[in-house]
Length: 146
Image (cartoon, rainbow, N blue to C red; front, side, top):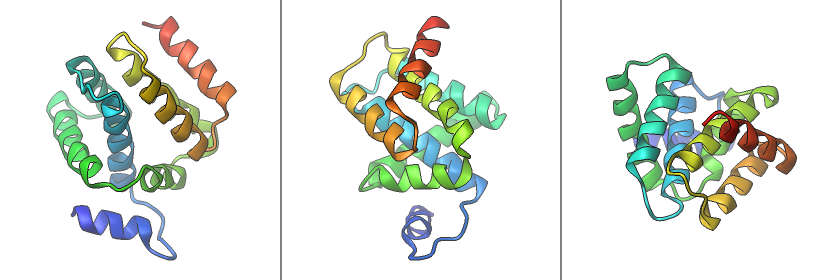
Protein backbone atom coordinates (compact mmCIF):
# COMPACT_ATOMS: atom_id res chain seq x y z
CA UNK A 1 0.00 0.00 0.00
CA UNK A 2 2.81 2.42 0.84
CA UNK A 3 4.59 1.76 -2.42
CA UNK A 4 1.39 2.19 -4.47
CA UNK A 5 0.75 5.53 -2.73
CA UNK A 6 4.24 6.77 -3.62
CA UNK A 7 3.90 5.46 -7.19
CA UNK A 8 0.69 7.48 -7.60
CA UNK A 9 2.43 10.58 -6.25
CA UNK A 10 5.43 10.23 -8.57
CA UNK A 11 3.67 9.17 -11.76
CA UNK A 12 4.61 11.32 -14.79
CA UNK A 13 0.95 12.27 -15.28
CA UNK A 14 -0.64 11.51 -11.95
CA UNK A 15 -4.36 10.96 -11.70
CA UNK A 16 -6.29 13.15 -9.27
CA UNK A 17 -5.66 12.09 -5.69
CA UNK A 18 -8.29 10.09 -3.87
CA UNK A 19 -9.71 11.19 -0.52
CA UNK A 20 -7.66 8.43 1.11
CA UNK A 21 -4.47 9.78 -0.47
CA UNK A 22 -5.26 13.28 0.78
CA UNK A 23 -5.90 11.94 4.29
CA UNK A 24 -2.62 10.08 4.30
CA UNK A 25 -0.75 13.06 2.93
CA UNK A 26 -2.16 15.46 5.51
CA UNK A 27 -1.58 13.04 8.37
CA UNK A 28 1.97 12.32 7.21
CA UNK A 29 2.72 16.04 7.00
CA UNK A 30 1.38 16.56 10.52
CA UNK A 31 3.59 13.71 11.76
CA UNK A 32 6.61 15.06 9.87
CA UNK A 33 6.07 18.46 11.41
CA UNK A 34 5.70 17.02 14.93
CA UNK A 35 8.91 15.04 14.46
CA UNK A 36 10.85 18.00 13.02
CA UNK A 37 12.29 19.04 16.38
CA UNK A 38 13.37 15.51 17.26
CA UNK A 39 10.75 15.22 20.02
CA UNK A 40 7.54 13.51 18.94
CA UNK A 41 5.68 14.56 22.08
CA UNK A 42 2.47 13.05 23.44
CA UNK A 43 0.77 16.47 23.21
CA UNK A 44 1.59 16.63 19.51
CA UNK A 45 0.32 13.09 18.94
CA UNK A 46 -2.93 13.91 20.73
CA UNK A 47 -3.30 17.07 18.63
CA UNK A 48 -2.79 15.10 15.41
CA UNK A 49 -5.47 12.63 16.49
CA UNK A 50 -7.84 15.52 17.29
CA UNK A 51 -7.22 17.16 13.91
CA UNK A 52 -7.70 13.93 11.95
CA UNK A 53 -10.89 13.10 13.87
CA UNK A 54 -12.38 16.55 13.30
CA UNK A 55 -11.27 17.01 9.70
CA UNK A 56 -12.37 13.57 8.49
CA UNK A 57 -15.26 12.94 10.91
CA UNK A 58 -13.56 9.94 12.55
CA UNK A 59 -13.95 8.29 15.92
CA UNK A 60 -11.01 8.58 18.31
CA UNK A 61 -9.97 5.01 17.52
CA UNK A 62 -10.21 5.55 13.76
CA UNK A 63 -8.19 8.77 14.03
CA UNK A 64 -5.51 6.96 16.04
CA UNK A 65 -5.38 4.16 13.46
CA UNK A 66 -5.07 6.69 10.63
CA UNK A 67 -2.30 8.52 12.49
CA UNK A 68 -0.40 5.28 12.98
CA UNK A 69 -0.68 4.56 9.25
CA UNK A 70 0.51 8.11 8.54
CA UNK A 71 3.51 7.59 10.81
CA UNK A 72 4.57 4.65 8.64
CA UNK A 73 4.10 6.69 5.45
CA UNK A 74 6.03 9.62 6.86
CA UNK A 75 8.94 7.44 7.93
CA UNK A 76 9.31 6.06 4.38
CA UNK A 77 8.78 9.27 2.42
CA UNK A 78 11.97 10.67 0.94
CA UNK A 79 10.69 14.25 0.86
CA UNK A 80 7.86 16.56 1.86
CA UNK A 81 6.98 17.59 -1.68
CA UNK A 82 5.08 14.37 -2.36
CA UNK A 83 2.69 15.05 0.50
CA UNK A 84 2.16 18.71 -0.32
CA UNK A 85 1.45 17.77 -3.95
CA UNK A 86 -1.32 15.40 -2.82
CA UNK A 87 -2.82 18.11 -0.63
CA UNK A 88 -2.62 20.71 -3.42
CA UNK A 89 -4.50 18.30 -5.69
CA UNK A 90 -7.22 17.69 -3.10
CA UNK A 91 -7.61 21.07 -1.36
CA UNK A 92 -8.29 24.32 -3.18
CA UNK A 93 -6.12 27.32 -2.38
CA UNK A 94 -8.79 29.05 -0.29
CA UNK A 95 -8.91 26.08 2.10
CA UNK A 96 -5.18 25.43 2.37
CA UNK A 97 -4.86 28.08 5.07
CA UNK A 98 -7.01 25.73 7.18
CA UNK A 99 -4.39 23.06 6.61
CA UNK A 100 -1.71 25.50 7.77
CA UNK A 101 -3.79 26.29 10.90
CA UNK A 102 -3.93 22.56 11.69
CA UNK A 103 -0.16 22.37 11.30
CA UNK A 104 0.39 25.34 13.60
CA UNK A 105 -1.85 23.62 16.15
CA UNK A 106 0.55 20.65 16.10
CA UNK A 107 3.61 22.90 16.41
CA UNK A 108 2.10 24.73 19.37
CA UNK A 109 0.67 21.61 21.07
CA UNK A 110 3.77 21.05 23.20
CA UNK A 111 3.98 24.71 24.16
CA UNK A 112 7.26 25.39 22.37
CA UNK A 113 8.30 26.45 18.88
CA UNK A 114 11.58 25.15 17.58
CA UNK A 115 13.72 26.45 14.71
CA UNK A 116 13.32 23.12 12.89
CA UNK A 117 9.52 23.33 13.19
CA UNK A 118 9.52 26.94 11.98
CA UNK A 119 11.69 26.01 9.01
CA UNK A 120 9.46 23.05 8.16
CA UNK A 121 6.36 25.25 8.43
CA UNK A 122 7.84 27.85 6.06
CA UNK A 123 8.66 25.14 3.54
CA UNK A 124 5.24 23.46 3.77
CA UNK A 125 3.37 26.77 3.51
CA UNK A 126 5.40 27.74 0.44
CA UNK A 127 4.84 24.36 -1.21
CA UNK A 128 1.10 24.69 -0.57
CA UNK A 129 1.04 28.18 -2.09
CA UNK A 130 0.32 29.88 1.25
CA UNK A 131 2.23 33.12 1.84
CA UNK A 132 4.33 33.84 4.92
CA UNK A 133 1.79 36.49 5.92
CA UNK A 134 -1.12 34.03 5.65
CA UNK A 135 0.83 31.46 7.66
CA UNK A 136 1.67 34.05 10.33
CA UNK A 137 -2.00 35.07 10.58
CA UNK A 138 -2.95 31.38 10.88
CA UNK A 139 -0.44 30.93 13.71
CA UNK A 140 -1.86 33.94 15.54
CA UNK A 141 -5.39 32.52 15.23
CA UNK A 142 -4.23 29.18 16.62
CA UNK A 143 -2.38 30.71 19.56
CA UNK A 144 -5.32 32.99 20.37
CA UNK A 145 -7.55 29.91 20.68
CA UNK A 146 -5.22 27.95 22.99
